[in-house]
Image (cartoon, rainbow, N blue to C red; front, side, top):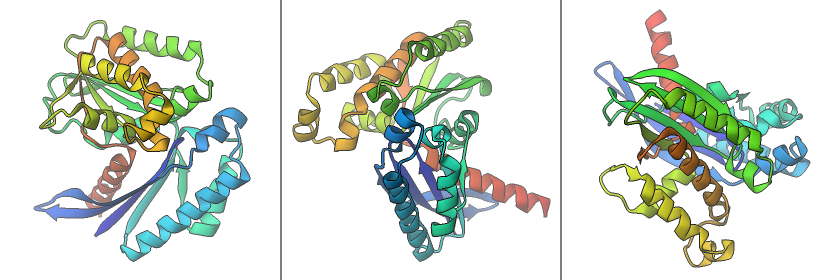
Length: 297
């Protein structure tokens, strides 16, 4: 059995095809195929609040290709979610309709709190001590989702309109930065020893660049050093000298700025990077829904 997860983000669109494994009543999954297409929908959505005809056509073609791949892989269940860019595009519903008509994929435009819940569903914390305090930090192209856990219990969660594409397009506001700072200071001031859990393509890349071993957490000081190093290169040299993909070389700098700011405001010294994201959470959500249906039968 195979499930498919589609994440339509502000920077890229992803498809994860996962093999579903049932063993003695428990269900897990193994990643089979992951495809990423850098469409940059946020450039349209945050500047014009509208997905252009060209980008809409590219998105529809991508969804048609994803549908063809899922058919070939014999995917039995699929969930497709769109986040910040599609939330802000006034013609988002129209694009959803096109995708249904031309690719036969049901796309959900999810709000920030739902996005945060799906990301948490990835169970990124499963290999660490759940009795301690953790802050989930997911930085996307258009929004940042924060979820604070104390002794395994969710105590606060919020989505902020602050992301890498939004910063590059100068669409971030001082008010949003201040709101994030105040949220973190209010909810973390009574907690000690908070560790971060970072999800998203940029933190995964930063973790690989840090060369940490055996799933060890990355220190704030290491992340700050990486930021200073990367920022010392021009965009062109980050591509040609450091070998970063073009669609990663620009967004990685504002991503660093968001992660460093969040860690500083929350007093976080170390961040775990489990290499999971929205698509992993979607697969787990499908598994959870399957288990609920099975229980109700």
